[in-house]
Amino acid sequence: MSNSIFNAVKIQSRLVIPIIRELEKEIGKERTHALIGCAIANAYVDYRKLKGFKANSHPRLEQEFDNGFLVEREVIDDTEETYGYNIAHCELAEYFRTKGEPEIGALMTCSVDYAAEGVDTPRMGF
Image: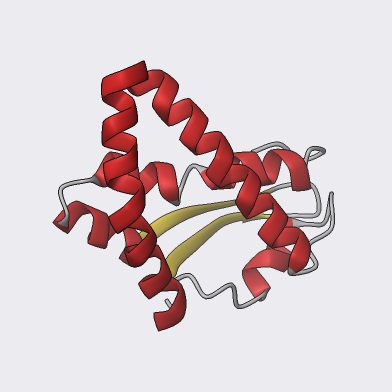
């Protein structure tokens, strides 16, 4: 993972985790995670658009682009109609586990993939 992305997520987490914890007290965990997850996912979709990703492009193209995330992927399916992979290792997941916040880490990072792929590759599904 490029240091700039990793450091940015670490800085963001210092702000986002306390906000999430306070919101959970006020409106409940489920509602908080839905709201925060939606906001983060929408921001990620906007980021992908700025980077030039087009709707319905093959997900393989993103894997060929250096997005700065240090994620080890194991491709298990790659055809013109399908693309699948397993995450073998993720530095962000490790970071959030050491902070005792794996669920919020997943909310801030992993869960955006579902929203982004739903917008960017609706013909393929996720």
